[in-house]
Every structure is written in C-alpha cells, then in structure tokens.
Length: 160
Image 1 (cartoon, rainbow, N blue to C red):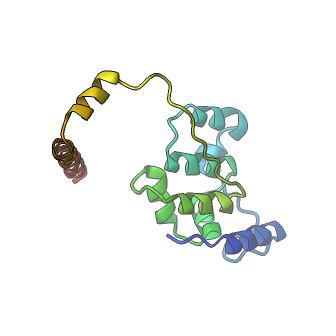
Image 2 (cartoon, rainbow, N blue to C red):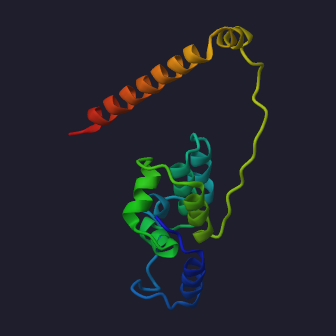
C-alpha cells in the first residue's frame, strides 16, 4: 500500500473547502459507534485501555477524527479494504505505511525506547553461553520451525 501524503493534504483542503468530489458535503462521516456516543467522553477512554497494535492505533485515531475507513482511504490514497485489513490485524503495516496513514489524519507517530523493567535472567544467559554456536543455531532453528507450525495451525483453524 502506498501513501501519498501531498494528495492527502490536498484532500483535506478540498474537504475544508467543501469541494471534495463524490461525497456530499452534508454527509457526516462518523462510524455508527461514533454517531451514538460522545467521542471524547465515551470512545477514546475505552480505546486507550486496549493493548496498542498498529491497527488499533489507526482505528483509534480514525474514530477520534470522526472518519470512516473509506474517507481515510481516500485521504491516504489507498482502498477501504486495505484500511480494514490493517485495523483488524490481518496485515501488519510497515512503519512508513503507519506514518502515512497518521499523516492523512494530520498526526505523526512517536516512537521511543525504554529500558526493560527487571534484570536479565542470569541462569538463561549462562546456559546459552555454555552451548556451542552450532547448538545455539540448532536451537534457534527448532524454535523458528515451532513458530511456523503454530502460525500454520492458526491459519488453518481460521479457515471456514
């Protein structure tokens, strides 16, 4: 998915000027959930307590701005289906895609790194260092294979 930030800015300007093509100016672009609730008081606090994923962040910010998936897609130069897949967690967007979607909403991402809480597991580190490089590689490959088997089982379980 490609995000065209200059086009998104122009679309925002068209919306503000009431010149957007294809969407009547009088139509409210709130999701059904947002129409029946006060966005600031009811929706945002509930969403802030959810675990943050890229899709959750996009949905949270889109609803905060009162936009539909179709309207965000129009601003971002992509499709409504792509926005839906991101919000449902079916695809994990790159940082550039996430930044582009947020830019279409007039926001920018903020990333920070913090020291992890707690100390490293000394017993695990000692056991790891006691293994030869070949043993560590074999163990890493077996974990990778296990992760692949789990992912495959998950995909098969979701099939109708």
